[in-house]
Image (cartoon, rainbow, N blue to C red; front, side):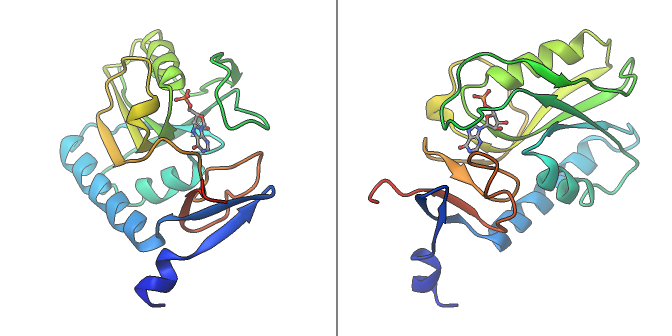
Length: 188
Ligand code: IMP
């Protein structure tokens, strides 16, 4: 595929057009880099990766395979945006963490930090379990949308403040299976 064909690639999801934003190989390379960084920072520490369902499942699966040392995995599920593209500002827990995080080094794995409310909720919630440390990992960060002050320790990509889909991220449950990440096309 030529560069021009790549740039012009679009997809339609729930009747709205999205254009290619981050392609599969760009994502793969960055996830591998994050994995190398985490492997070095957590050598011998056996971190627990806590994936945030549903959006982070693909990122987590790829990231975990780029981590060379021992590590564990668990999941938490929070309320989603439902049919909307805008956060309603309320975070509720739909599935709790099963693992005992007491004394563990925890890495929270998010697909995207938008307002920051979910990540703030997760950091506070996990701190209640007495972990040795808690750090935040997100594939994408919409800095212009972030309202809550929450430290992000590993960020894949800083992105524009527009809705994105693909690589696990959905728009009303569709689009998660796209291999690339697409952004809402404002010119549609
Ligand atoms: P926050 O609490 O506003 O930071 O939002 C975090 C959650 O909202 C993410 O885990 C996603 O599930 C969802 N979200 C935020 N922005 C997007 C987007 O652009 N596309 C798809 N989901 C999003």
